[in-house]
Length: 631
Image (cartoon, rainbow, N blue to C red):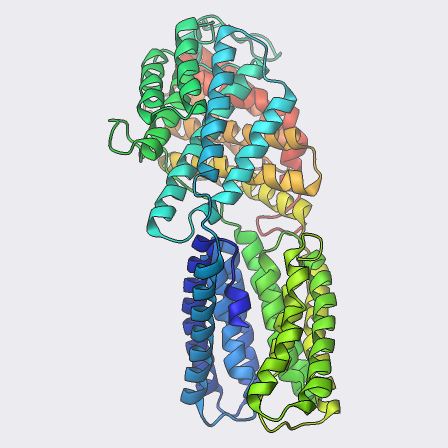
């Protein structure tokens, strides 16, 4: 079973998955043995302990990423494999734990050796090439915008966003296998984060929003008048600039042609210098310069690749993690209760299978959809195990023959696993068959007992399917709704936290990564992409305004009227999800006040005030769920 579970199509993923499978098994075996020691002969305590441990691991697995998450979840159900498969023989705990550990480690070693011998080397530069080409595309678009050429249409924007989201998903796999690969993946994540900043500048420019402050644009104090939308001038900061556009084009062409890194870095350095009178554009170019220098030519450029203002912060799905933990714990407690009440001999197998299904598949985009395929494949796997045990094995005369007779049945799974249309859940055919087939000579047991055990194992995915459908159901649309809710509630928390300005770079970095996650969930869930993106960008702009408000409130010389306007806006923003219209009116009023007293800062609030009204539905959507994900 471990050989199948640890197998991967490329070497880096194979090594890292094997490592974390071994680490997770060690932790799981230790937890299982400790639970058995603590429970003694008291099975209810064992059931409760396993449910809590597996729920904890399932929750952590939904917060972590990549094979670290896999190893954490595996540590949960590995404890079940120790504690449940030998509940009838609790007297040899040390031997049992060592047996399970050595069995898994042997499988990991065999799988790793076989993979290294037969798995081809991965094309290591595939993701890096995509990042380089996307950077070139964004720089070309920025140069075109500065020349006043045709704007980037919705199709072009959608293409850029989709590619950024796809690269973000692929970077976990790119960073697998070695510390060098992991450092490469982290550097590429920094480039993608910088691409998001550049795209945001481009998006504001295409929409005609101000990419400058009032002071930059030379706006007079009466730039905002009346109750209408704020006015601003586009002279100055957004005027065409052929010199800067040409420099950005040179950088884009160098990246596109895969020229020596020094060419692109030099062009970006020059572009950074030329854009100093345009702070928002300058910040976007500086981010790209630093990130690409860190990845393409580390140590060559004097830029700050790990700039403290540009931290690499990833989105963590705490709502989904909490729901996964509660779902796993509650389901296992119910299964354990049924086992205790009925005394069914196959009860341990039901609980073991459920512990695997309810935790391992909780990280999937749509667990219920996958469980349908898993259930079908496990039914066929159980049938194959029964056929092998009662039709083939009676012909054997030794334990070696029992093992050899399993091979044709194992190989039946190879074609479905290799085919795109049947691969989903196909591995469960083999996993269930191997779980049920225990080659020990001489043979013992009855067909009725084998049938009951098979039914117990197959019952587990059916239970998990019901749980995934009815207990915190998850799919792409719901996951996107939870993500939007987290963004809205974070803005509300920022408005209520006077210290929010101290963590502004961390919060902005997290919001940028959440934008990519929103893009991914919107595409997979069939939602309209650009409205979701507009809402996410509006959230980032409102976050910038909130940070500015808190900074202004610390000024001892702030005019009383300005202080009242800012405090009113913050109070309205604390209920952004409930009453976004009131927040929009408060932002408009704050813009009018600040444009008269501090025009240099009013541009930040202006962008937020202009972004909120067209995206009221987005913020209502986020406000429709609590911070814990409930409707």
